Every structure is written in C-alpha cells, then in structure tokens.
Amino acid sequence: MSSPPVAPAPRRPLILLRTSTTALAALALLQTVLAASYLNGHYDSLALHAGTATALAATALCQLTAGALVRLGGRDRRGPRGPLRLAALVTAAVILQTALGYQRAIGLHVLLGVLLVSGVLFGLVDAWRLPLPARAGAVVPDPDGAGRLPRPGGPLEVAQ
Image (cartoon, rainbow, N blue to C red; front, side, top):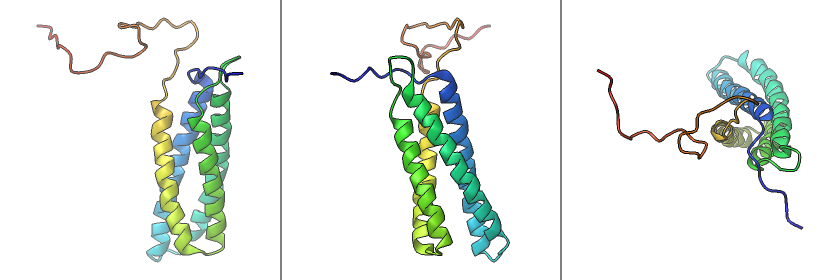
C-alpha cells in the first residue's frame, strides 16, 4: 500500500504556520536581548526573560498545531512533513530550554538557546518559502504554466 501523494500546503493552515513561526522568531530574538540585558547587570530582565519563556512555549505549541494542520492537508492528500517535524523539534527544545533555565544549568541553557534561535530562524525561512495557494475562486495569471512568477534577469522593456 502506497502513501498518499504530497499536496501543496493548504492556505489557512499555512497562514497560521507563518504567523506562529514569525511570532516565535520575534520572541526568540527578544529572549536573546533579555538574556544579554541580564548578563549586563540589569537583573530585572530575568523576570521578563522567564515570562517570555512562557509565551515562547505557548507559541511553540501553536506552531506545532499549525504544522499538524499543514501536514493533514486536504481530503485524500497529505501536505509536506517538514513543518510538522521542525515544529515538534522546536517545541521539545523550548521545553528542555525552559527546564535548563530554571535548573540554572547556564552552560547548557546558553548552548541550547543558540541552537534554538538558529532552528527557529531556519523554520521561519522555510515557512515563508512554502508556496501560498491562491484563494478559492481567484483568477491568477500563470504565464509559463508552472505556477511560478517569471525569473528576474530576462529582457527588460522600458516604456518611453
């Protein structure tokens, strides 16, 4: 028995994935700023760092849900696996990262933090690279029939 063919990601779950991944990236970058602020002697930043960790975990769960919806795809076709795999990995890393932070395992916490921010940013790029299907009923011109815009660098026509 063969697996169902891979379909393009559905529109609404892909928009949810892009939104949650963008929010996750913003929160991850905020975490780095708050950690640096704490290490520079602004000790009130630690409470904000802990609060942002909670928001980061909640957003990672939203991203995991969005990744599952993208994977479920349409009726008899499944969407790409990549977003779900990455969301599951990021969610697990965020949970481990939070635990390491509360255990004061600073060396591992910083190391995993660097890897986590890198993974989140790669996930952000991947989420925005998935093609967004047109709205139902929308007429989209397709000059070459491949579903892509023409590549730049072709002949340039200048109106005079």
